[in-house]
Image 1 (cartoon, rainbow, N blue to C red):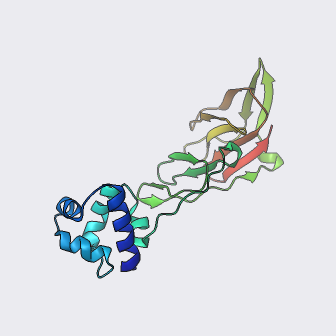
Image 2: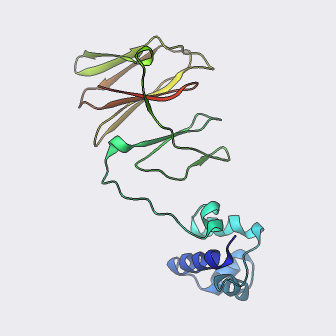
Image 3: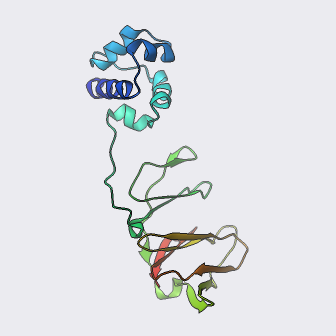
Length: 194
């Protein structure tokens, strides 16, 4: 932990939150002199205070310990670059417009990279009454199933949750051509263009 960087970040966050050193000290149950010492890089907060500091400033502890907040690059809202994160423990699904820091079940999640589906993995797509009817003979058991199917276009995401032990069938309105993305619990994230 670089005390100079951490102290500089604490000062930046404190000022951004319109707190005095005394007010921050009171929230943390330390003296304003301790806060001043940290901000000048002459020491670092005790590790037992890091989580509380992160909560006060609404930042993650990893960024606080690194002494910097990484800013994402604005992509102009292009949904085709949507990033998917899936928790291996609970199956929670998170999407973001760019790479971000996501945690679930106490673990930092890694960005899933969608691979082009080989012929044997592709989903069947039919046009029925202005909807895409999506189906597959993919195994759908508790241990091996497709957990979601999504249609991603330049400005829209339409997602359908799938459940184990149900047949994979979904209808998604045909509002545009795009990328069909799905997640297999054993083999990862796939896509095909439709």
